[in-house]
Image 1: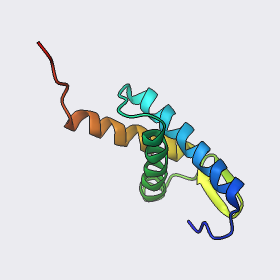
Image 2: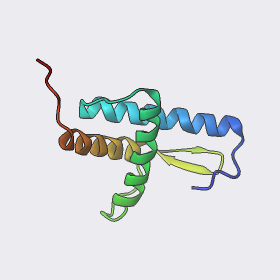
Image 3: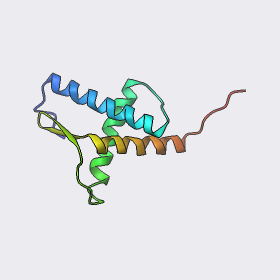
Length: 98
């Protein structure tokens, strides 16, 4: 993913799309830790997981948004973020306060 050809508005739009994908992934998994920055990070991590996992399974890219020269996979980002949040929620336990 080369961000060299994007202007400031393209980068901001890419961050907003990643944040929305991360927030949707958190909502699907039912586990939310953090705010807007965590959602943005989860959106990018989900996109990286999706780009890495799903072509190995032979699945095509279903829906992607092209911002400048960057092709951002929406569906794989949401699914990847959901999987990542689900793993995080399984590894961390809830603390009960008495």
